[in-house]
Length: 208
Image (tube, one colour):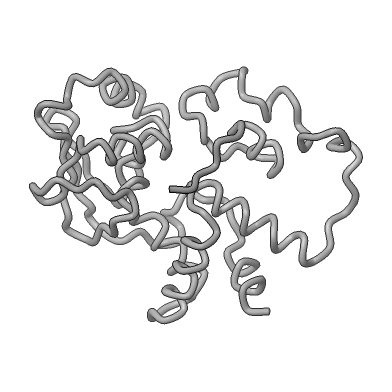
């Protein structure tokens, strides 16, 4: 499976904002964006003004990298959003938010989406009492996500739960850390999606 294997902090610096790809590190003074507020590379401090296309491209890359999906997956999700009812940009973000790896991260069972993806692939989570090891699995309203009983002492999960309040739990999920379970109470509306993105620019980019 293809995946990005470079430094994740370079992605945040390229977008000039925190994408919280490193989990707890992003909340500390060690965050690369805090220390070097300019794009990476030899000419990072001398980048010129972006064109309209460049602005659209950067917006798309920001959202795509935030959710940790490759270009083909993201483009496929965009065309799926175009076939559904509603505003295409908002539906696209809803499709990204309801991926299983993002839901696990939003519920606080993993410090970031990369860790959530790894835990899911290793079979540590149940969806409606059935083991699911596909990170891109779509979660719908009413679905429950549970940490398997034999996986509840994994340090990555327990440490993430302890720090979940610092990251914040969105209103569209209900979580019981005592029972290691969470429920999707509703499909998130745009104002509930914690993604500072101008999704209309992505629509304009793919519509060319």
